[in-house]
Every structure is written in structure tokens, then in C-alpha cells.
Image 1 (spheres, rainbow, N blue to C red):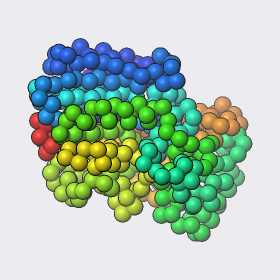
Image 2: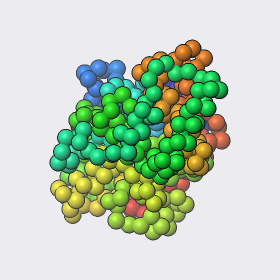
Image 3: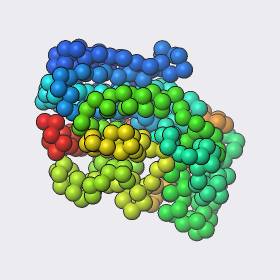
Image 4: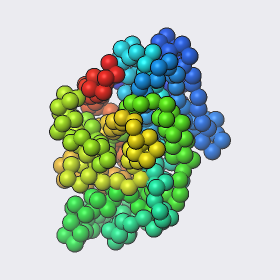
Length: 375
């Protein structure tokens, strides 16, 4: 397949392609099994996975896609690349697989990051929180809420663009760019119709993943998890983003993997999150299976870039798409412009970007599999 055809046009096409891969997987793991979970009981919106039982159960490789729905298109391409190029190099006698397609099928189908309840699933893994979700702290978000969640139909005009920039400049002066970045990306639990909403409680999709992890990780002494995301970081260099709970320094991991950009999800290297899926897996291992070895990472394919103007453009795109979803647009042209900007933020159409993204994925997977002794 070419780089263009690896990215599927629709959720349905992606799911159909993934389901057909069971025959390919069974060439190496004859007892591999497909399974799925219909979200909300809807067989047209399913979390799908392929699992391969092994004899000795030495190690488990988990690859996940589509936690942020629209990001599942690039994730699907990487998943297919993994099946095409890396499957033959793994040892079926010692290595088990858990390949998961579209954690958030509703978001992937409707080309949104969130699920149908507007929940960002990567802010929803808060099962260890001792307090209700809506009491999880993010005080700066409340101060920015009116700016981040404008009411009424989306309109585009020079005056409105100027108004947005003036409001943004005011908040940059009063709050500062680092606090605005932290407030928006950390996750919030008080405003259901706003961006980066972590939900009122554990979501169905989250519970499915938790069940899969708890049931499968127990059986393997070594676990590797690779989770696919797009949107943040340099435009032409994928970042490996690790949990703050990963004990090995980023510089050491970059050396081990022979990969140039490895960061930790904290303010000094990337940004912080609450309710992150990788944090949950590390916590699960530490509490329930402390003798297990885990390495978990997110592949973060940057799209607009990591400069301040690019970061602000990303924020504005997120605000406009969310406003469009809840309040509509003044004209069809505005609706199309907002949708196009949102696609550019998470599924760039530029062939150069797609070629480099898959080359980065190939390089990172190779380095990780070698360092973690999977190949």
C-alpha cells in the first residue's frame, strides 16, 4: 500500500480493513481471535480487537488507535503498517498481541475527538480519584471558560477575528501562555459542552479498555503498549510521549530506541494531563502486578507545529469546532472552513506529512521492539 491508501477514507472502511486482517494474523498465530464491543449496543459503532494467545506467554504487545476519534485515521494507517511489516518478525511462541481498533468509534465516524457525550476519553481514566469527577481541580479553566466556549453560531469576519485576537491577547497578559496551555490541555470536569471535558464519570469506552487491560496484562511478565495520537508537537517529527510514571529518563529512552524525540508528559517536556490512559496502565501495574515490566508510550504525530502561533491556531481550531458542534455556523461556507481546519489539525492531507509520519512510525516501532526484546 502507498502512504495515501494506508489512511482510510471512513470509519467503516477502516473497521472493515481491520476485521479482514484476522486471516493475515492467523498465518502466524493460528488461534488468533477477533472480538468487538458495540458501544451503546450499536453494532455500527464498535471497538474491535484481535487477540493472539501464546504458549509460553513471555511478552504482550498492545497497539491501540482512535482514543481521540478523528485521530484514528492516522492510527489506522500505523496499525496496518505494523501488521504488514512487523508481524512476520515477532515470535508467535512467546509473544501475544492485543491490537485494538477505534477505542472511540463514534468520534472516528463523526470526525470528532470526543465520544458522543463530548468526553475526551484520554482525560477519563480517573478511577483512582478519591473524589467525584466534577471536583477534580483545574481552576484556571473556569476563569477561561467564557473565552474557550463562545455561544451562538460560528461566524467568520475580520472584526470577529480581531475580537478573538484581542481576547486572546488579554488572557495571555493576565494569565500567561504556559498557564493557558496547562488549563486547556490538562482536562476539565465542570463544563460538559466545552473542550477537553473529562466527563462526569467513567465512560463505557474507558471501561472496555480497563477490562481488556486487567484481564490480559495479568498473564504476561513483559508488556509493551503503543498508543496512536495526532495533533501536537513538531509538524514533521513524531514525538514519543511517555507517562510521568515511566522511570527511565527521556534522553536514555531516545538513545535506546535510536529515535530523536522522546518526551515526558509534564510541563517541562510536553504538557500535563489528568485521567490519561497510560497513567492508568502504569498505576495498574504498580498496584496489582509490581513484578511486571511495562513500557507504554504515545506516538504523537504533530500537525501544525509547536511554535506559539501554531499552538494558538490549534486552540482556536478546537474552540471553533466545538462551537460548531453545539451551535452551528452562520453559513455553509463557515461550516466547511471550520471542518477543513479541524481535519488539518488531526488528519493532514499533505503527502509529504503522511510519508514522514509513517516513516517516523516505522523507525520508532523498530527501535522500541528491539530495545524491549520483541524482535
